[in-house]
Length: 313
Image (cartoon, rainbow, N blue to C red; front, top):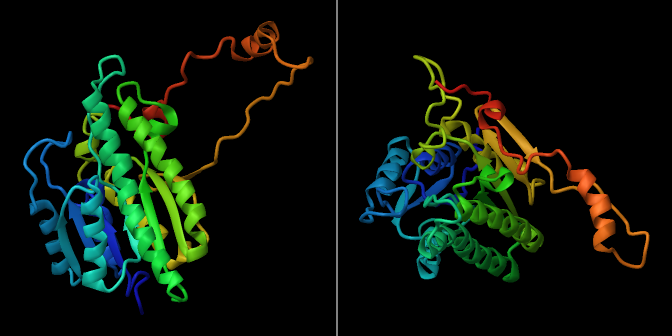
């Protein structure tokens, strides 16, 4: 019996640790040959010396399990590095079929305290990093289609966050980048559908080095219990979206964690008001909109404990 991703090749960025590692291992388990990309810096803020060790260790795990993998050390936010990453996949495995964008850093600060560098660095790694790899993967798939190849296969899985959906007071850079990734995903989905390529995004909840502060204090599993926030809960959804079974899933945003997948609808109109005159006046808007918002919270925040079904220890 063949595996779902047998004969396909994949790139997973930021795959040396956490979510990326779990995703790379899952894609390999499902039969894909994997390029394991990671810049290998020890700090979750992107600080420290780059190292090939994290990517090499994951590639070795895949080899030990009987799969095919190659490690890649590189910063995907660098345009030429992203080009080289896609070229490596094509050179090693003959083609690229799956791109999972996961690489990211955190530099949290309230908006009134954030420096320009803290803003730029997070936007660069998350949003530009997603664009760079997507661009070169798209060039590869479009080129094959234009050359007359029938049945071009392409899957993109991007990583957004509920920081974009529900707000995160201390993460204006991260929330903005993750919102931008959703826009990039939906645009890419429309542009590449005719070439046989799908693009989707996930908002994962997982206990990793990146989220150690977010989930600090939430109850951890007891002996023999599976952690509801384990990255291994997210990886199968990535495997599914990368597979032929998900051919009809395109331009979608899914929240994923601990045995739960929620499909997020695009924004809908909550209320609509029409002017009774030729154009709105301040007074008419005040009469219509102020009562609509009266008594509502100034900013409805995401109650993580309630939605996750978790309790702080």
